[in-house]
Amino acid sequence: MEPEAESVHEDELRDAWPALSARERVEGFHLLPPERARDFFATLNAPAQLGLLEALSPGERGTWLRAMAPDDAADVVQRLSPEAREAWLALLDAPSLREVRALLAYGEDAAGGLMNPRFVRVRPEMRIDEALSYLRRQAREQVETVYYAYVLDEAQRLKGVVSLRQLFQATPDKAVREVMRTELIRVREDTDQEEVGRLFARYGLAAIPVVDDQGLMKGIVTVDDIVSVVQAEATEDIQKVGGTEALGAPYLEVGLPAMLKKRAGWLLVLFLSEMLTATAMTRYQDEIARAVVLSLFVPLIISAGGNAGSQASTLVIRALALAQVRLRDVVRVLRRELLSGLALGLVLGSVGVARILLWQVLFHLYGEHAFRVALTVGLAVLGVVTWGTLAGSMLPFLLRRLGFDPASASAPFVATLVDVSGLVIYFTTAELILRGTLL
Image (cartoon, rainbow, N blue to C red):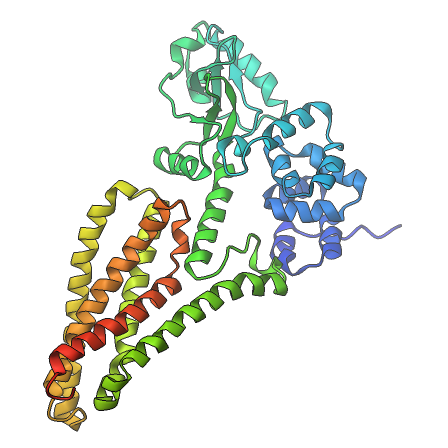
């Protein structure tokens, strides 16, 4: 008797997946029982599905590609080169091929590119018992979701929506139009995926219908479709805020050369920008030579401003991403951050003054003009923190107005900007307060 084939649990394979080679992934995938293999494949994101399909034989590749929902298949095929794309599309059956080609015509980040053209539909004049019978037939044809049935007229215009619960609760002889809801959330084909995500978050829906300019229904975007999109958008924003290009793939799947390329560019820009700090220091080298004590507080000054700016930019970038603030709110944000900057600067500046005066009493470190030095540091911190907060909060608005991604106003970039301007504020304050004494 031949030994029974070894099997593997999908959770074990999922945990090990990032560390496996392409060959090991195929071997592990083949060890899954058929039902679990389908479930496992459905949970992979599009890049992981593409990698697995590329490693399978052409016959298996076609089988799995045909089993995918049209929107998922389009996500995978979209990542191929034009030459390979046609070869893969040839593996699809005629109905699936039409659906996938139609989806590929939409932008990847638009509702049309996310939607699934398979959904449950009923007619408004149908009786409830007819609608339920028709719904059962459609449910056997690989529709995306049966939480809602969409009510379409003879021209395929969206007229309303009815839930399964409403259908089951209604009396059989009622017409669908009597129980359907006509006030419903819908999006157009060109609606940006971020806006679609906000609608899901705001209304707690399981699916949103997609219509064209004439109101003809084209498909649905389901909550599981948008979850991966929202995760990818948030990941991209976080990576940009951290001062790197978006990786576009899971961390462990990005090769070292690609990783270095994505990180080196921003680091080089920040490094060259930080050289302006040395230029600013050169401008005030005479003041530093006459009052060496001023140089002791340079790290304190620039770090306070940089941290305040990074904090403000991160908060505003996230608020813009979630549509909590819009471009028209720039004046409100400006007023709010001005007050915040002044309050934070006053707190930090007071702590700086207290620290200098205490050390002077205990250790006599700062000479006879210690109070003036403390006042200089305190006022400089107040000015730098206020300026850093304003710069960090306004830069994302400026980038959005210019058509760029606000996340490009990364925390390191804001910190570098404030470092240079913070030195100017610090030494200008020192010239005003210490003139005739240390300067």
